[in-house]
Structures are given as C-alpha cells and as structure tokens.
Image 1 (cartoon, rainbow, N blue to C red):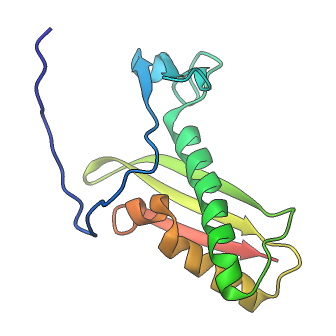
Image 2 (cartoon, rainbow, N blue to C red):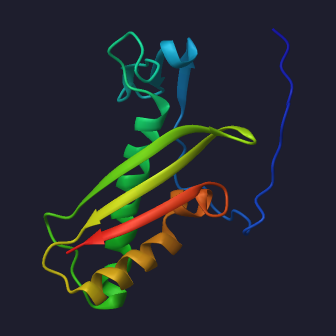
Length: 151
C-alpha cells in the first residue's frame, strides 16, 4: 500500500511547543463501523443517528469529549478565580448534525450546571473555561455554539 500526505494544516492560533498526549483510534466502516483505540480502552460500535444498529455516533462522541474537556478547563481555572468547582458539576452537551448553504455542518449547545456558585462566579468560570478548553478553541468561529449556565 502506498502512503502519502493528502492534507497538512497549520493552526492560525499559535504553535505547538509540546505534545502532552496523543489519542490514537482506528475507525473501520465509517458511521456503521467500529472505533477502537490503540490501548483498547475505547472499543465501540458506530451507528448512523436514527439508523439501524446500537452503536454511538460521531456527534455523541464529540459531545462527550467536549463536555469532559470543558469540566477539566473549569477545574484548571477555578483556583485562579478563587472558586471551587462543585462536586456535582455536570455538562449536558448537544451536538447537531445539520445541513446548510455549505452542506453538512455541526452546531452545539452546552448546558453547564454549577450548583452552589453565584451567577457571577459561574459566568466568570465558564467564560474562562471557554477560553482555555481546546474543544472550545477548535469550534470558535467554525460552528454555531451556545453555552448556558445553571446554578
């Protein structure tokens, strides 16, 4: 099998100085296939949204990844802001597969639950996390995003 580089893209928001982790996953069969990570911790079936099969789909995986990362970004920023992320913090994420003038697109909504914080503390923490979270950075200016906060 011959191999070649088809696409190389360079980030416009700064350079990479150190790689902290690389997640390596092999997908077979596309939306009706399987996803298996190199370490075997991820081994799931994939299904088309609303279609046959009992697997997950890329939109659910994206929602899960972004939510987990966003909570991590809040925890990273909390000490700098003088707040503690409540133990029962959670994020409900919705990622839409949609169509528009440019063809298929994604859009997303995060509902961040920070019970026990004041509205001002929660707003400040979420805004800081949105600036820090790599998923937020990747989506900024690329897809429609709405982030709501509940305290």
